[in-house]
Every structure is written in structure tokens, then in C-alpha cells.
Length: 478
Image 1 (cartoon, rainbow, N blue to C red):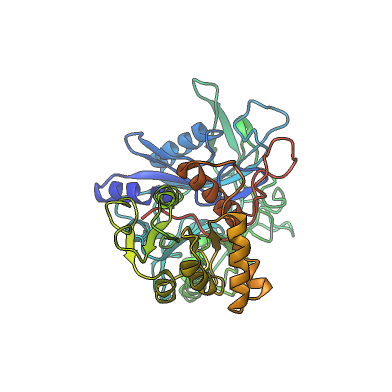
Image 2: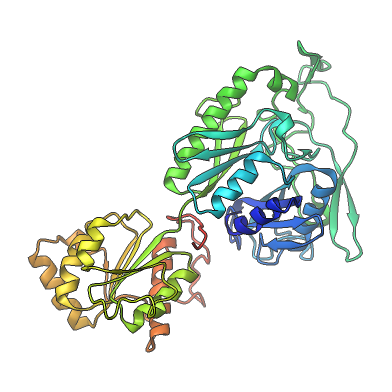
């Protein structure tokens, strides 16, 4: 939801209820990654996207349904070979989408949206699989490890749990058609409890809650999930069909341990700037078990530092902002390093580049672009840059300039592994001529470096369109 944080925060401040559908897992050639979201308010206004268009209509309907019945649901969309016109992804990918109604006064989510909109480092951990009463539970986790919200107190739920949620036995669904012929699912009345594996009827626990497993029909997780008009209820196998929710409410000690473990896992993912799922056990142990969390990390935008206040830098600033970076321009010459020349930069700094780099904060997501192509600036700057754990270091210049720069850097003691990190001449071979084309070339190389792309044309090469390598989270532009 990061890309929608500011708009959703505004909706919360205005007291508008809404439902948000979030991609929590992907498989194959899915168009959007985990964290992509579509939100619909009570007036029917929609923002965002989960698939780039393939299943937006079906997800919109699910959001409207969640607003009406207040239930949390987990749905899977994939390609149907039997029915190419079914609601699904024609690209062959698979999306798992969590649909959750949100009331304007939902504390943990509202606080996370506010912090994310301010650019603070916070994580939101939500239960997407597990006992029914935990579905949709949320924790707001700060960088210092403190957290707010709850996973086990049902009174804090944004809505009740959909009968089709991935926990315990799940009812069948009754497919319906809307005016456009699009399939939708409505939950049928819950089935009567079935005998367990021994043939015995479910036994009440100490609180009177019935404990049972739908062993007769449950198979491997997701075995009943279908796409389009045949989309069915989620079911989990016996190993995932835990005890009834009353036992969770009764065992508050277990709930506290579960929340502490969830907060620790979310903090670790926040430290790494990751958005992904993590499994923990139902008793709060740090091992895979019956509870799956989806953790969204909101971190400050990654930095792009452009050294050299030249005309190419102005175009690169715009490209960096477009990619969501916090962009700084640095040059030792005050006549060139001015706000008037770089109005779109977040910072314009007058300082010697190597001195500024030594004294400013960088991390594993930082991008350094050296456009000065002047040895008196480049050599001391790159001597520092190539020894920092940053994401990307590129330097502009001709091949002759590169060879001279390489020789000078070796003379000051840089090793072969350190020099191998330098992208020089900077950018991909696009045949660029203008500053804007050159900026596009540099931006393309930065994306390819971050995502593991080859930089070659997709046409006819047979390589995957989407790569699994992700070294930086999705972030908002500051």
C-alpha cells in the first residue's frame, strides 16, 4: 500500500471508510509485486492497481463486497487454461490478494498510513493465513522494535472474517454473474461440523468452543482455489486447520508471545527494507507454523547523489525523482550548484564531492552518479565511493577518460574487486545523445542493476520478463 499511503491517509483523516486489496504473494510472470494495492471507498472511488488491468474489475467487486459485509478475505487469481475468458492473468502469473475493509478509526493501520505518508521507517504486519479470528489482525512496528495494535483481540479487527478465509474448514461458494458476465463469489451458509479423523464428533473445549478439523475435504493448501466464475473458497490441510478462535482469546499468554514474535520478525524485515511474507508458529516460536504474516516496510526513499552540476545532471535529477529517489546534487563550484539550476532536486550542496560523501549518510540502496569527468574531482571521490556498501556507482566519460581514470584509481590503491563495481562509461547503450536520453540510459542501468536485468531487448531473447532479484523495497518519492 506504500504507493497509496498519502491518499489513504487523507481518506482516514476525512473519516472515509474504504476497502483495500493488497498483493501479498506472486508467482510466475505477475505484473505487480507484493505490496501493490487497489483501494475503493464507500462512494465507489478507486485508486491504485494490483495487476495493471488484468483482474482489476474482479478485485474492485471484492472491495465493494468487503465494504458491505465487513469481512476480510484472501483470494488467488491465476490463468485458466480451460477458460481463457475467465477472470485471471493472461500473462500466466498468479496473484494472492488480501482484501480488507478499513474503518476510518482502525488504529494500527491509520497510524501506519500516517507514518508512511511522513516518510518514517515503520512496518505493518498483517495476518493473511491462520486461525479465523486472527485474519486481518495488524501490528504497527517501529524501527526501535516498539509496536502497537494487536493480532489476537477481535475487538480491534477492521471487519469480521470472511467465511472463505484460509483457516479451518471453508464453505463452498455459489457463483453468480453480474451484468457484464463477470463471475463473483458469495459465501454459502457454513456446513455442519464434520467428524474428525477418528470418526468422532467435535468435542467442546473448556470454554465450550468446538474444536474440529475438516479432514474429510481438506487437501493441500489452496487446493480448492480457482479463478474466474469458478473461483472457490480457500481450504487448508489438517496441518493448518488450528483450534477455534475462543481458545486464542482464552490463551492470552500465547497471544502475547505471538505478537512479540511477529513484531521481532517485522522489525527484521524493516531493517532490511523488505516487503514479503513470513511464517511463524501459532505459539509464537520463531519457526514456520500455522500463522503467515504479510509485512510491508515503509522506509525513507533511497538516495541518489549526483556529483557535478552539469546540464546532464538536471535531466538525471528528473529521472531520479521519477524512480522515487531522494536526489542530492553536489558540486564544489557555487556558480553552478544553485537551486535555480536544479529546482527539482531535494538538496543542492556546495562542497568538494569526496568530502561531502565522507560526511553524509549512505546505505545499501544509495545510488552515486559521478558526472564531473574531471580527474581532480573524480579520483578522490571514486576512491571513497567504491569502498562504500552502496547499490550503484557510475561515472561519466569517454572510453579514453575511463582508461585514464582506471589507471589513476589503481595508483591510489584501489583493487580489482573494488574497480569492478564501477559502471563506466555510465549507462546502457541506447545511442543516447541529449541530456534527457543520457539520463534515461543511466536510469535504465540503475534499474537493471537493482532488479537483476540484463539490459538486452526482450524481443526474441526468451529471458524472464520479471526477475526474482529485489535488493530495494518499493518506496514513495519524498
